[in-house]
Each structure stands twice: as structure tokens, then as C-alpha cells.
Image 1 (cartoon, rainbow, N blue to C red):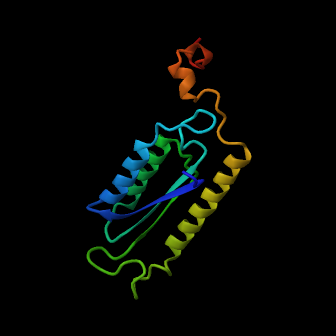
Image 2: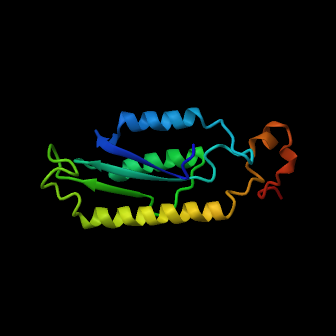
Image 3: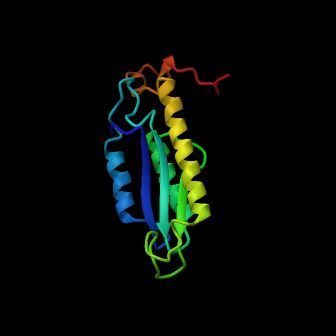
Length: 156
């Protein structure tokens, strides 16, 4: 709860994020009812990203699922908030194993740098702004029957 930035990591397992990553998302969801000081959901004002590795296709699918889950909980997802490394298809070396090519991979290094830069700057922007403005997204206002406080921009 003290982190301004959360990067979910997962390898690819049968084309999906791992069950451990799913459990982390489920644990986050289990505490999503908690509120911050402004009465918003607890993860508002935090930034999220995804880092995926593996030796099979599916990195973009995994990132899509992980980033959607984080934004659904209230995390802000900046542009290019994911990076991945995919080794040779099939059984083979992991990212840090000798000869894997992982640490030298320009594509992975570039995207990891872009992701890190964007996460850091988005977190700083949100913190400098004092978080996400609370009017219009406070559960207590909605739950207390004060729905008339919210002006629906679609209402004509």
C-alpha cells in the first residue's frame, strides 16, 4: 500500500499470465474496498505496469490482461507501460541464463527503459497534482444517496 508504482511480473504459461500473477491480482482486488484519504478507492493515484518473460508467444495478451486488471482497481496506466522478453520458442534458457541473449536484447532494453521512464513520470505528475481529483469518484457520495451531487454530462 505504500508503493506509488506497482509493476506486475509474470512469465507466460500456456499463453497466459501465471497462476501466481492471477493470485496477486486477486489479493489486490480483495483489498480494493479500502479507501484513501480522499474517500476514493485505495489504489487511486498509483501507477501500474507489467513485465513479462517466457519462451512462447502471448506477451501482449498477458500485458493486456494485467494492465486492465490494474486500471480496474484504480491504478493509472501510462503509455507503453509494459515490456517483455521472449526467448527461443520451446524449452530453452531463461532471461539471465548464459547465452540467452536476454540482457543484451535491444528491444527488451528499450521497452523496459520506456516503461520505467513513463511509470516514474506519471507517478510524479500524479503526486505533484495531489492525486486524482476526488469530486466525482468518491464511493461515500454515491453510497449515501447523494447521487444528485453528480452532474451526468450525457444528461440533456
